[in-house]
Image (tube, rainbow over all chains, first blue to last red; front, side):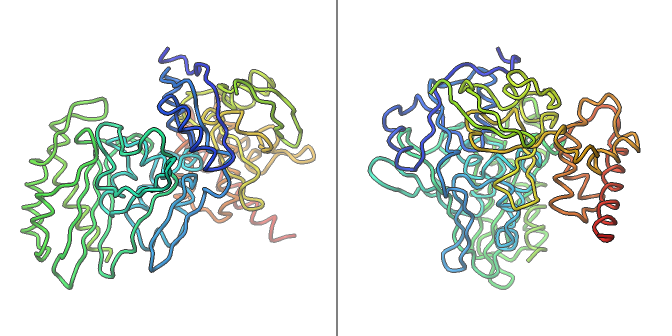
Length: 290
Length: 169
């Protein structure tokens, strides 16, 4: 089955509006896989992992928006592709971590199909947009039978590929707050070839006041069942000036906060060894770009 | 739905067909319509052999390269795509195809339709693409023969010729 590349049969649902999609989810609940760009769901289905129903969002109009407002921040609709986000100048300028995570994701062709919201909903521990969003901060907007709710990204990744989305809810948008002046923000990852999922990825957001770091958010992926925040390392940065000495301490702390495993892409030992270096480099990159 | 009647335009020709919901665009193009210039490589979005150009939903003249193995045919109702066989105009090959033949950017040929289509989309999006940009944009097309050097050379040759032809008009 796993190598046949032929999908098993399923019933296709093609809602024409968000409200119709939400009604279908209420009816079929966890028997439905929701598909936006298809680049993840179709790969799973060719491996034989298939639900009785597949709901494609392809025919719901006006979900492919990327809008930026200096007062309210960035909004990314459920059908906005990775390439669309990568091609938006305001994202590149104001959210360098998310911009990079979208513009290096997969291949040029899959970036034309896959979506940022889909990458986050997949909640893979190695998801590049997951890592960038967790460091930057933001929320996922979910629409259910009783209306909309917004879940902070800090509470969104529950366990391995499980999110706070309930089976009756549709993720319609991801929101990022406007970042204050003086914020440093960057993302980096390690892969064997460019289209591979990463061995490890990391992202950072530092809100600076002069040379002092007021607030720090560090995220790291592919080193635990979910993308993690590094709370001990963040505490070292908070309230301090970013010096080489401090970064050495952060780099030494990072490996104590992660639980990597051996898998096809890397080993636990290697991931632990490079985790601190990667976080230090991504902090340096963020500070230099400022 | 288990099947859906769709209208799909391929290389300017309209097809009214009924497709199974669980078939990819690639399966339909190759097995149902017998248009075998679109190649089946990995079937999971990694190799680029099944690249086709989506004609609409993009700015005019800037077609978007997508993978036929990663899209359900049933969701392609009303869409129009171009395959390598549709790149020629009035019996003349596209400059990208011509250049690929000339500089021997084709060996076994299996990746070539996808590479040609991806090359066209690169130059439509950015007629001045640099060698670095061309290489980066070709990351999703795997070629096990050429080592990519000749492919990149062909894209640069096509780029220069298209720019020269644009100026002489």
